[in-house]
Image 1: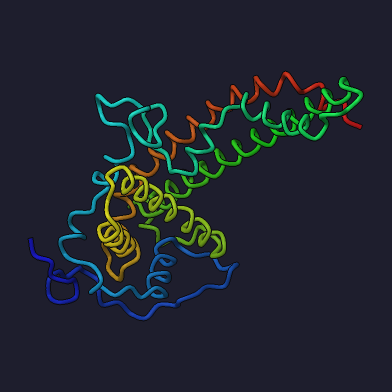
Image 2 (image 1 turned 180 degrees about the vertical axis):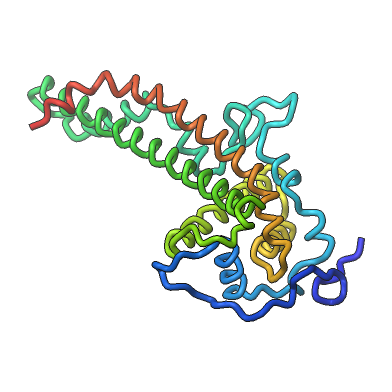
Length: 272
């Protein structure tokens, strides 16, 4: 297939010639999603010559989505970073696979290593149990923070897609403060690229292919063309589904942490 560059006559998108737009907004100004996307596109000023016609056509939500879930006939254990049929970002998976029992025992072992010669073994055991409780409480807090972070991405991408729907005008009504909208768009963009990153790992893309995909995805979302709104709406369902699947698994994983923590709750409650 041709690798002709966009901007060299290979692809003409409607609305590519636009009037100048403001590149920034007062943080308190009420801004429409479409206006903020145009503003970000103006600031980034992406070079169309950095992506190809073919890559823009080929990179679709379905291409990314196929690398987010364990394929039929494959077990979680045989798929890197997989849990309950969902493939997680590496750092999320690393945390998800931590054993509450191991976390508690490691904390207690650390206490005993420092008190090998303690005369009062009973007191040392209380301190060890308390350390286990604190370690598990920290683990539970981290899990809940992860759940909330994923939920925020899920909310962000759903909100952007809703604002860009025809019923919203499309997104020409100023529903959000500029400061809030920047955060919302940043979270939504992160969610889309997180999905791309996971799929790239699943399919073991080389650096060149991964870099091309990242450039193409950014161009699809923030290039100076009207197709970016359609692209945001197209990616939203895939990203929302993926975020929800991860969020629910993270929430489910908190059960064993809570159960293990209950063994040590009395020791942390008795602290003075």
